[in-house]
Length: 438
Image (cartoon, rainbow, N blue to C red; front, top):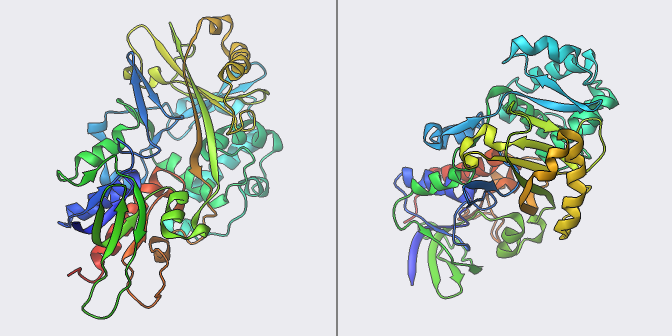
């Protein structure tokens, strides 16, 4: 029977971050992954010179956990231009970042996107969100994002035409029922760094974490059937847990469950740990030339229709498309595309007319390359006690015993790359600071 001090279940960002921290400190561990690749929900496909991320995903370079663990130059990050293009009165209007692009501040101030007062309130929200530490931000009074925006005095026009498509793409929820703490977290991260994608696709992030691990740390294509947990029996002793796979059993003294919330709930027999999920649908089109080379996210604005946002990814990262081709990523509002939808022709027939209003008849020549439906894209979080040490521990039968089973994942913190990686870091630090395993 194979034996290890620590077994980490799941090679997503949380599990890889935890393993990275443990092995850096000289602690050996084994990471078990059910699939044939690392990264969890951060996935990328490559075909015919194109790069396809599963759903529109980006890295915010200001994420503290990413700054700590990732080698940004090695990822060859390709930044977006700060700001966004918003559809207003049948044209795109620039909503720039005046702090980074002061020369475009006047154009932003006089465009029809909201009122001047709305733009002043955005500056105030940015300033408030950047105050204090993240730990303090997570403890601020919370309400829904929609309530917060209304309490801050934003007009309904600004809420509907900017915040719903923009934050709807971030939260995957255009109802804006997400916690106002998440609103402040997102604004803080956008203000402090760039929006970027790795030149080789988002999957380069987990690959880099995996490549940092010692040989033999990863065990792929191995599904965990169940956990047989032992109890702590007294001072000087240590439990022996068993992780049961399809074809073998592994003994260990500590377990880190770094899976999505539903799998964690099943393995730990804690149904209350399961969360609701927000989904997304993403289409990729190929075009002979870019419809808009400004390297900005394009938002639906004052229009109706299925398209929530679009971006020419090959203008951001030329490596995303072969020479002479452009790759356009289109995100669909979840209200127009329920998670159980499967009719690709129907979706395309609804999306193309909307894109034609944006870019003209040239859209008819675009080739649809891929459609990704991701029903389990982000866990829904209440943002309660997300930095509590109790969030890193799996509840046990003996509450007085030192814990040797831990939980990591973005469902334990903010639903984001930062939340996933930081939860893994926190679990590793808790293990390293605890009593030694004999």
